[in-house]
Length: 288
Picture: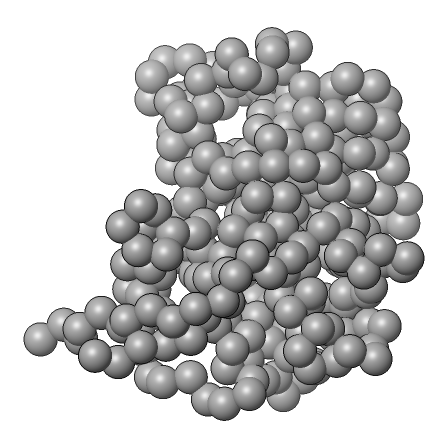
């Protein structure tokens, strides 16, 4: 039986199966199908996604990420920190910065001294126009800030939307987040017709001008302990609507991220990443 080596990595509890395609080429594979098999918790390795480390023609390295449902994500904040930690450790021990190609463009990652387990990422400029999120409706250059969204269940939420590498809908609430029915509301927002490519969903509660609590629902993965692009989305919307300061700590079930957005063209995200363990796993048989 063919087996493939993997590295299990995690950032704030958002965990990934990382495959190294830099040291040697990875075998031809349907990566979405492999993600659906390997990401099953309790049955196989279990993870929120499958992360590929690959060579790049336009940057130092390339990242591809497949969600647990097999769909490919353009970008992942926790995923890119985990990949950066792996690359610094294995291939670039003397580098202070790396450029990583993603589906959302090239992103720069930095060691966050003095703690080498902290990775700082230049996340690029948030996109707020409907067409760039993407979200349905006109005019296409109009933002979605605190606007009503009626769900199939009949409930109406006041949501905002932004693309911080992937699309996000954000709901601010004064309700304790542990009482919010994320497992019921999350799928309805993710698959709402407003979002033609589906969306991630973040429910947030402000504790102070520089501190916000967030529970993420990730497109293709469901409820997760943390979401890096989601933390960025919450701070962007919080700043634009006057709820948060440009430098804010985002508290999530899996831990904290520091988000900084004073320059409109660059979001900064700083947070931890680590290797959990390494191993090998059998490749599933090819479909006939």
